[in-house]
Image (cartoon, rainbow, N blue to C red):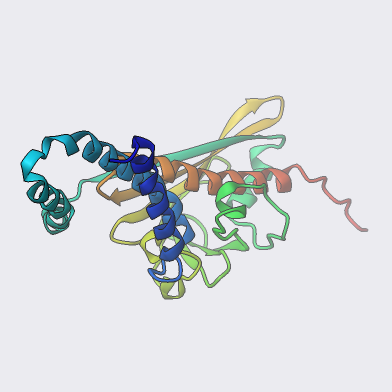
Length: 264
C-alpha cells in the first residue's frame, strides 16, 4: 500500500544493520563484508522489486501467498548446501619497468630481508582493508628445491618452495601455508589455503625493455570454489593485484637506489 520507493529502500536499511552487526556478532572480517555487501544489496533490491510487482496477484489468497513468499528463503537455505560448488583456477599478473639490469634485480627476487615502513607503494588492499605488508623474505639454499621464507607480520609467516630457478631470468615457487594457525588479521574464510580459496604457485620473470631497462613480471596462481566464481575472480584480481603491485614497487625502489661508494 506504500510507495515503491519505501519498499525498495527497506532492504538497504535492513542490510545496513546486518553489515554493522556482522562484525561484533558474526565475527566477520572487513574484507568478507566488503566482498559480500554488493551481492547482499543487489539480491535484496531484486527480491523487494519482484515481491512488489507480484503483490497484486495474491487476490483473495493474500495470506497464503505471503506465507509462500516467506517460506521460499527457508526452503532455499535447505536446498543450497546440496548443490555442488563449481571450482575454477585463475592467474593474477602485474609488471613494472625497472631502470636496472637483470643482474642487479636478481638478488632482490630471491628475497629482501629488511623491508622498512614506508617501502613499497600505497594500495587499497593493504592501506584501507588492512592486509599485512611484507616485512622480509630470505632464501634457504640455492636452486630448485630451496625454500624462500616470507614474513608478513601479524604472525603471518609461510614458505615458498622453489620450482623454477633460472638466474637472471626467472624464479618460481609453490606456496606452503602450513602453520598459519595464528591467522588473525581477517576472516578465516579468506586464508590463502582454505576450502574456498587456495593460492598455489607464483613467481617473477624478467624481460629486456631496452636502454638498460628491465620489465619485471610477477604472476600468482590460485584456485577457488564458490557459488560465484566469476564475481570472486574480480576481487582476486584486486586483492592479489594490489599485493603484487606493492612487491614490484619495492623491487623497483631497491634496484634503482644509487649504489653507495665502496669504503677503502
